[in-house]
Image (cartoon, rainbow, N blue to C red; front, side, top):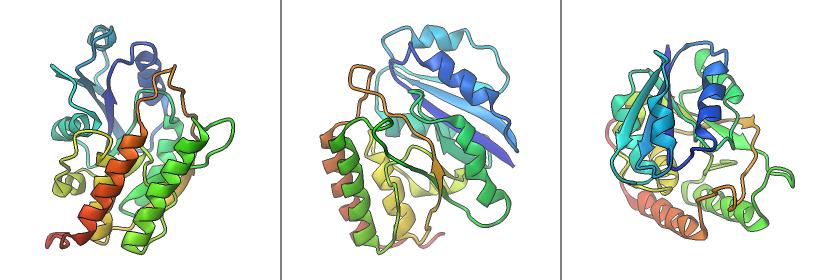
Length: 232
């Protein structure tokens, strides 16, 4: 099996080099590629990416910022792996956890795996950020009669072809809710494994806001009333 790690990047000149190094330093149980999409960065991000020389890396540039969902859509188009996982370049997630996501797939227990974050005082951006995440996740559980622990997690691992079949249209952070809504609507229940997490602050570049939470609730409701796809 080959794993495609998809990394959307926007104005991350301070962290992107470390994020890439950490991702490549992991001892993965599969062949791996790293597909990076520079989503119209205006700082030195593009310069840093252009200096990379590693056969496992593929860099794609957006001439202007389109949003995380659009960046992932581009990354998936260029992915050559059998499975994919999303890894942001902000150092909030530890790529050392990715092999744990692969375990239930490799031993045949799961097809879709989510990384479930444990929020604590040392790892949370703010009280309202955590409550917002819990509210969106609770809404999904009620709408789809399931029991997810963390809908908004970045670590979503699944077959590349499955993601492509979902036809995700949300350009921004709404893609997280759209992915989950479409998976649940088509009876794909994610297997969850615990992961580590450290949220950065607004001063450090945290981008998600309460508006993204409202959009997520709308998307979950919209997807719930649509009919399941015939193809699974």
